[in-house]
Image (cartoon, rainbow, N blue to C red; front, side, top):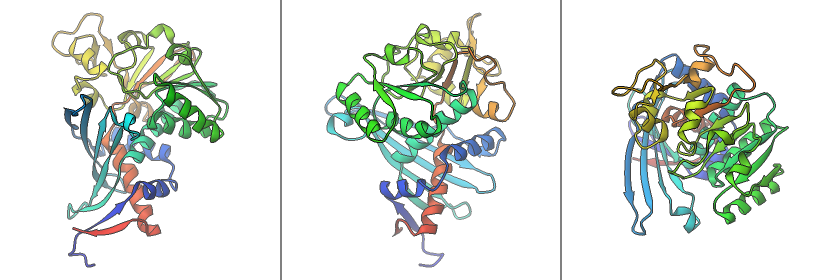
Length: 345
């Protein structure tokens, strides 16, 4: 095949998993965030397409483009779809594809299964948040939501937090039992909790990986010094945002512009301000200000934890540049190892 013949390298989920095993996702996410802090990325708004399935379940498609302009430029797009009825069918809730583009010709050069890398980059972001904002040597990690994303978090966090054990909770008892069995079989110390409140009690790190659209987790459940990795974005009640000692996001414009999730709704209600004090309409006099981004903390532009008793809320919206960064590394490993199938365009 010549340079004039466009072609795609297609990677299945199994091939993505194999190639991703050769990289450090936490280091890759950190490098991407530092590029973002330096202004060396392009991060457009996501495209959001919702619908209702024939059985009445909520479904949606998200398209997240992004580019990184460092020493190894990477340009691409992730499309990730989900249906809340998928788990009842024995399917993962979310699935999709990630595409990479050639910088000079703009041709698509790689296409790969997106679900694994999406969960991996989210878990890696949480791990980086724990390392940057969490208490030293956490002993208890609570994971609420026992789907694919919850399991991905446990598998990535466990070897990096050797002193910690995992308290698990899910509203569906069968999912809870399945995840306890899977993690126990993998040698990860875990125990089921009878409720979300019991899971959170005394936890140093709380990770939410649910599909809820109704907040249920109040500030009073949290222990002094807890870090809340608010991955699924609607779990904590507004008082957690108001009373947390530190509120950190991944990208404020993405959080601000989303009127479906908690922080975006609080911004529109005038009870939340951006990191620079900007508000929507006429903000309340008591409006809480977002303290900054994780990239700001990593770059030394904003303070992180200042007190071991400080309760911190990490609220990542999910940035397409992280998917693109990991996908570019996976594609490079795949080329080196001869993984995937070359598809003519």
